[in-house]
Structures are given as structure tokens and as C-alpha cells.
Image 1 (spheres, rainbow, N blue to C red):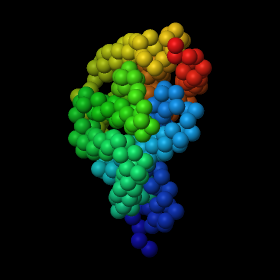
Image 2: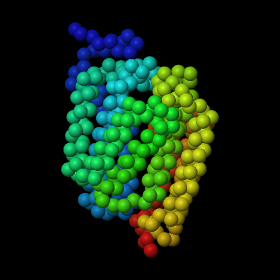
Image 3: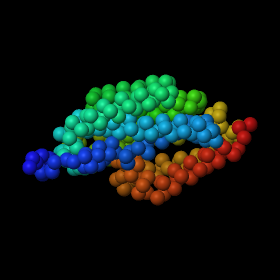
Length: 310
């Protein structure tokens, strides 16, 4: 019986269809898919939740971005499989540990990307164009930009902005430029928090796993976090007062305390508890942060849908 060697010299049994399917699903990182909820921002803030057809289009767009981002994760793992085998956490990823073969992953990527782009084109040509732009950015990121200091986090932020743009064009609604700015700054905030955690967790070996980390220092990342946090707070506050699609009584300012607490809480988790490497896991583990996000969402929805714009 043929045996495949994995990281650390461990033996892996031949992969059946069920094991390959599980490996593909794990490799697509479904725990990361909640990030694609950014696609729904346009639906919510354009006050289109009461339009069933718009809801369906936005949800389909979100699902397509889940598949697209899952394919990107597989490509990233295909490129980094050897480095991942040396990483204390990433070595358990399907490709690195031998649960998934490179051939199966490559075939899955081709099928998903081609199928998703065709579906996106049927759903909305402008949406398909944005999705193609997102994939182009991700291709440049996984091959070049993730190794470039500063540009790596800017590229990650750009991916989130393109998600927000995609959510707007698929339902053909305008979105306040303030929301794009806030989306970019929030993504930068989370990306920098992740970089800081990687520097602490990997110590001197950080650059072996991600070359760009060789150019970051804790002091630099903390300085960048200060700039981004301040900019995000100011941008969000200005948004609550000046965005054209909000109630004229500035009631959206009632959400500012939730944003303040959420950012301060996340900084506390980064600096005092050494968390922040995976924002989605922070939301699952930290009840205070999860409660803050839920309260912000409920308050924002109440203001948008129950208070007249005039």
C-alpha cells in the first residue's frame, strides 16, 4: 500500500473522496467566510432589506465571494506549502499535513474560479467586473504584495473595499464614500493587529514564514495602529454626521460609543492578552466584543429603518 510522507516525517494514508472533500473544505477556511459579510453592507445601509429580490441578489453575491475567497486561500496554501510545514500552526493545514494533494486543490481552484465568474456574470456584469478585480488583486497579493512591507496590509484592506463595492453594484445602489473609507481603515486596523500578533508569536523566525515581517517591528506596528485607529474614529464620526443617506437629526451618532468601545476592547485584547491574530476567533471567544458588534448592528439598523431621513 502506497504511503505519502507529510511534514515531520509522518505518514499519511491514501486519500479517499471523503477525505479529499474534507480537506478541500478545510483548505477553503470557512471560519474566515464571515469576513465576506462586508458584501451585505450596501444592502443594509442603502435601506434595501425590505426588498426581497435585492436581498436574494446580495446573499448570492456574498456566497460567491465566500467561494472566491476560499479558492484564493487554496492558491495561497499551494504556493506556501513548504513554509507552512515549518509553521507551528499552519503545518496542520490540509495541504501541509498531506490531507489534500496539490492536484486535487489545483483542480478545485480552476473549477471554483471559472464557475464563480460565470455565475457572477449572470448575476450582474458590473458585479462580475468587481469580482474579477478582487481576484486580480488577490493574485498580485499572494505572489508579490504579501512579501512587501506596508503594501501587504494595504492590499488586504483593498480586498475588503472591493467586497463593499461588489455588494453595492450587485443591487445597483450608491454607497456613501464614508463607508468605503471606514471599511478600508477598519480592515487596516485588523490587518495590523494580525501582523503584531505574528511578530510576537513567531519571534525571530517570523521572516521565515512571511518575509515582510522582517521589516516590521512592534514599535512600527503600534505607531501605525495609532494612526489608523485615530483616522478610523474621526472618519466614522464624520460619517454619522455628514453622510447623505442618514437621518438628518444625526441620530447615527448614537452608534459612536459602540465603535469606541469596540476599538478600545480590541486594542486591549492585542496589547494586554496577546490576541488579535484572527479577528473572527476574537469575536467567537470574547463575549464583550461580540456583544458590542451585535449592539452596534442592531442600533444602526433601528436608526436606518425606523427614523425618517428628513
